Image 1 (tube, rainbow, N blue to C red):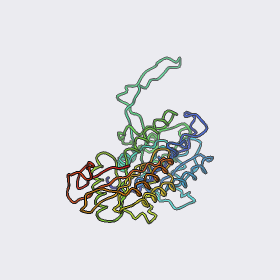
Image 2: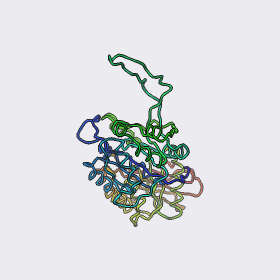
Image 3: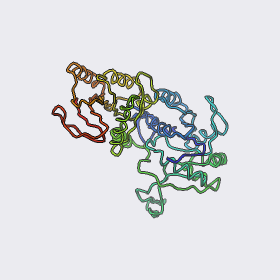
Image 4: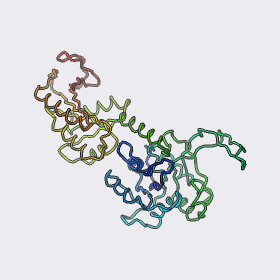
Length: 402
């Protein structure tokens, strides 16, 4: 990913009442897989290393709720700001934190570029964020757009069709949007009460008050906004699907084990999203804890010990201490790496019984434990061991047991 030289921060308006969604809970606080919607949007920003600060603007009555979400899910770089009575007034309050240094928690650096993104758009990726930020640096303002799905029509005073717009000429304005901070802040300072109370488009304010023509950036299909209850169901389905497409490979620091992890990474990377980390499980590794608290639900733990039930127990303990909601099955695959010249696979009956008993216990907690025996060689070896078929690829031969 291209590095960003400018200081960049983000403002997430999250003060809506959720009237169109229905129900007593505002949509930004509705749970998806046990995690509030706003937490997904915050985490999307946290994953981007070049975003310095994240301002979440919420209504006064929800400040304590947002504070508890930040604490529960371990969000970093987040400052909570009291919102206004409209969307534009809330965004303005978020920008004031930088310009007037109103944050009581810590000193915030005024960014060169500020991203504005709805807290109820949970699927934003770094690629589109980078595109709008780079475009904003060049043009002063930029925003994601998508083709119109339906034709826009206007009705007359009698309720009959007056005219329609040529759909090919128009686009739907989406989020994220990005601005040179001084431009958007100046626009809000000059903004009339009418625009603050009834306007909805930030790009229009930059054009109207600062004569800044925003660069329009074609966005992806996953930038949609959760508005109605059916959108919550769709968002949850997308999250479940994404969970099955990610895996974390955990190895200790031994050279052969790390090499095996690398080969597995290379073997899987074109099929699923893979992250590989080398740690000592005896230490409380913050990186691994962050992964557990993220949205990865599939883990491969590789070791070269004859019996490694202690390691898998440690991983389960870390999972239970993390904030990951176990409403969706977590898969832990314990990999025993055989690096000896003896190619026969074996595991003692007592150890196998112990593993199966442990697996049955944690299954009640929605954690699925499997075992994988891998014969590791420097060169591919095609053979059969103990009558069991071995899949050979890149120096790894594997036999699955459960």
